[in-house]
Image (cartoon, rainbow, N blue to C red; front, side, top):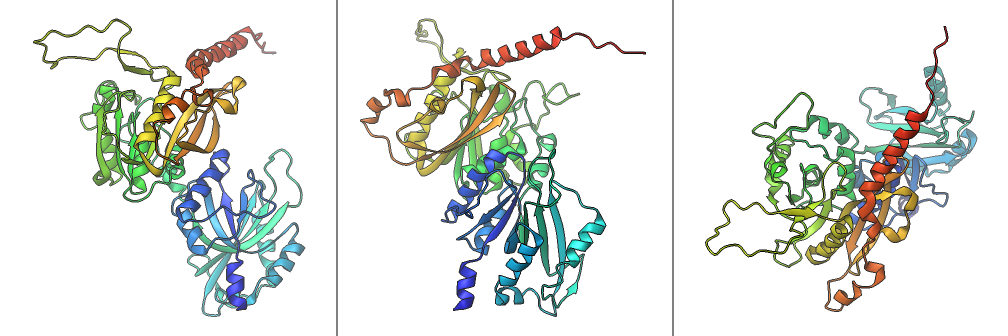
Length: 466
């Protein structure tokens, strides 16, 4: 009975990467929810810390998370912790011996690593810290190349590189369980991608978006602003069938000028399908279509498990939709439309997000998620600017800073109910009306650049002294 209780009370230590800090908590929560588990941190939880202590989860839960996360580096079964090494030793001595025993057997091999966050130790000091762990009842042999079990002593010196303390704030010791998927950021880098464009999404952020959307095997995922398909690559990596649309004919068909340096035109096999083929995922590629996101082409039904997208902001890609400001002129009776090229007009950001949320409310399955980027002019930002919809619940809102005055926010929403006839009136409510200030984002973006360059030009030249 004591053994069962100790297993139920086990805690796990997550070691997290210190980039994309705001995206880490929603990612871990989303991955836990796939397992049907809640995020239960220790009482002294600090979201900005590189170490999180989790309770009420199993080793299987943590192994599952580590097969997907790009925000966490490693996970450990925690055996002890303290503010000093003396406290750590006391904590380790209280850890149930029966839980340690199977990893300390005479016929097993092991090694101990020392990791310090925000401080570098010389090799001699690392060895001293390892020798200080001799009170633990290790009976096996040390094997540095291929051990049966790996243990880690971790010291947290805070997050301020300009104010590193002499002694750590916290010290942890635990058994290594698994590493995260950080290597995917390098292996899926757009620099190595077969087909890219000016706005191809960073591989790390694409994978984070897929995790926020809780993409699973056999899901059907749709991107209404697909571009060069970076998000489709990330979603297919987690086993989803992918499709998308875009209004840009040249991008969809992979023709026109290339985005790579020293390459003038795109090659004959530069397209989204080729990107998935590059990673052995072509069997999950359904298709991409030339289509206007403001005009739904699908039969109205709950078709998609997730909608994940990066709408154009009007900076590097224009915001366009089909239509004309002129009066509609009926074509002649003998017009067959074979060579017809639709006229396009400006597509305001507020309209893009209104249409996107309305589309998600109709075409997502119940519990499906919408994940998209929202550009923000930072001096004016308020929570009320986030578009809302009566059928969608806001799950997370994470900021990625682009400059001193602009950023974009990764918005994750979940469908919680179906559209009803009364919702058409409810959508007229001010709470659900799109924020019109988004329409001026492009002007504010370039206004900030102009101001910065103006200040730079006004700086006096620095004279060199002989």
